[in-house]
Image (tube, rainbow, N blue to C red):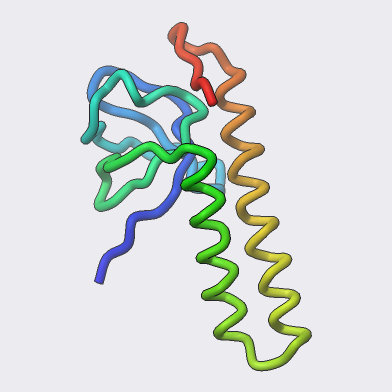
Length: 114
């Protein structure tokens, strides 16, 4: 089974976008949706090197809650559940912070609008 992963779009050049998965390594991907929706700072779902959707804040919050549910369900103790919750929340906070940082960068005259 393959999963799409959330990534922050850092810049767009024609039908290619560059994404950051959280390790600050920029990776080229194919824009597989309407190009006008793909802007630096947007959070995209990427599957097999293709942007398949752009997430809004509601979708990001829902995804965060799903991750928290999954992580805490896999934990075997209360302490592990709390640590899993904190780690999932921190992961999504970092995702939003990276998104904001790239959205504020006005490369190519593009800016994501939340």
